[in-house]
Length: 87
Image 1: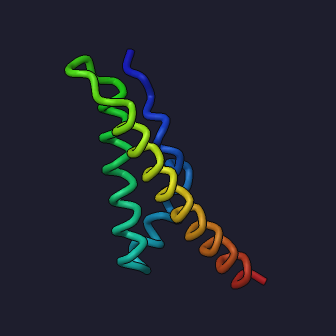
Image 2 (image 1 turned 30 degrees about the horizontal axis):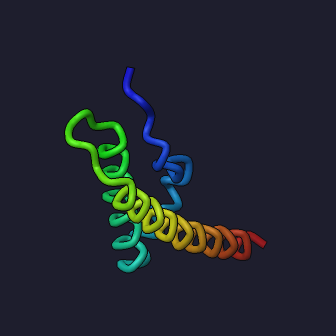
């Protein structure tokens, strides 16, 4: 059984992400970079080949967390905007 990618934390918000990607090219680039980095990080942590230095993996984890924070901010603003238009 394959390990689940723990870096794919935004799967439940795909509809909002798709709407934001249509709305903003900047968000689309940020989210695309996040997906690429999280996939690569997961692959590195689960590979059986040459070991990768911890410093490199830690730097990737840090960068991925910065991207996650930015994506979360976008999603919060998007959800707030959606809530305001309903009232």
